[in-house]
Image (cartoon, rainbow, N blue to C red):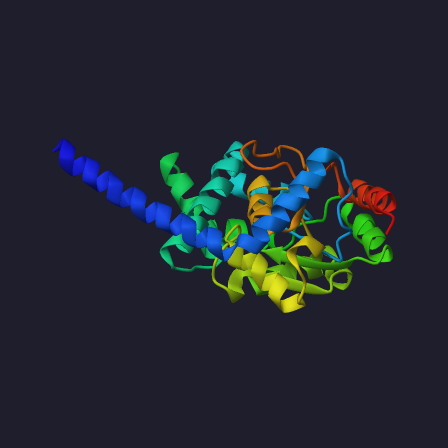
Length: 277
């Protein structure tokens, strides 16, 4: 039995090693850019001024407070379960990405809410779960700094786009309701590649469409996992420290760590001044 288990372990490790090599070869150039960006941050040197800024949407730009209240109501007043629901939704979006299946983020969110309800002994129908998510998710307000911060960045000459795990229709409605539509050059959804962030193809989709190099693009998010994915492809990264959000210690620190978008605009101006651009 021990011999069989050892052989099986070697086979599994072999597949994993082969997959890792394939990914490493595919992203060699991107990894080089990522190393340059990380090295610049750690040594205190200025970064190349990005030409394009990609923004994550939910939590980074939009406040989830109304969604927290709605989910909490659906779960019998348990607003404290929102983080569990959100992490469950992210978990199964990655499961679908790895298994080659695809449902929209809203569909996965509905399923995740039903799963959380079941584990807590709360009765919740699929219809009620969907209603608790979709309506408030599409009407989230922007954080107080967002509109002013985006306008300042645009005035500085940055091209601004968004990239979200939400559906194309969903983010269009979100931006319209939040008054953000006119502030963005383009909106990107993972609907196009049917893979969820932080899969490399989601970021490459944006790079390919815009025809830019990774090092010339800054990814901004309040999620460490999103920035880890962007850094893996070679993008510059900026972490917006929204309440309750923290960095992931096992990856390189983002090139910028700021409290909000106004602070980001200031940091980019300072970097540009140091770089002499």
